Length: 273
Ligand code: UP6
Image (tube, rainbow, N blue to C red; front, side):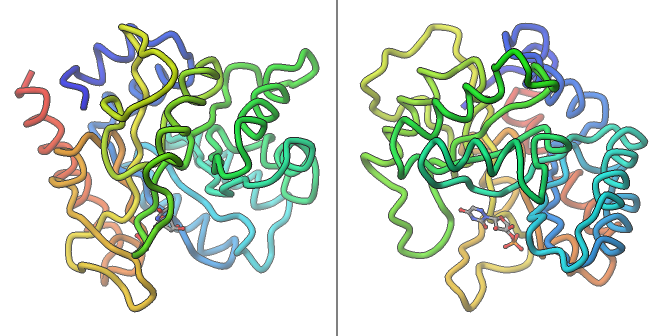
């Protein structure tokens, strides 16, 4: 887990999008990613606008919207600019390289056009990371270094099989494709996980942790929660909360509460610098 401030990490990180992430966190004093798992464009844009001031990143599942259209993209882009947050599409790509390239950069959802951050599973092997990196770094990809990938290295659901050699391979590929891989979706820092690829002295992967909730320990479908304090103590740089925020009686109040607790836990981790 990093003991450095977002400010220091923003100053030193070789990846421009990672720098931007840390700058946004610092500027807004927020490490909250809201998982806006609502099913209409109107609800998504309403949440993004109301919670925008308190979050660093909005995480979407764009394929659960019943009415996705150009208006969804335009609305998200406008709100990201208005409130200075980044957009993370939690599509969890998991297929052969040739397929994921099309899912990312073509198709109905046009994910590359509006999502700063995407994620993938390494179940298919190294090729998936190689393929997404290749697309993002091809000369005719118009979004340049404003795009990045997180590797889904662990999962929060009960009985998750994303452990052991799967998690180690996630670290291997993150190290190998550092130019496009920002870091991980994981429940903790993975810097001490055994890997076949040597650790670079100054590597600084960004850790996003899902399954953060202040008032629940889990749901009836196997989700398992930890608190912001616990997640950040274990190495999360950004805490991801869905129902804990959007399903709270007052989503804005909840977002402020996660923001405050997330920030205090971060301050404690960096020693109040
Ligand atoms: N998510 C997890 N666990 C993982 C990976 N992703 O919960 O291991 C995603 C879910 C959902 C969000 O797809 O969008 O994070 C969690 O929502 P919740 O806070 O409402 O449980």
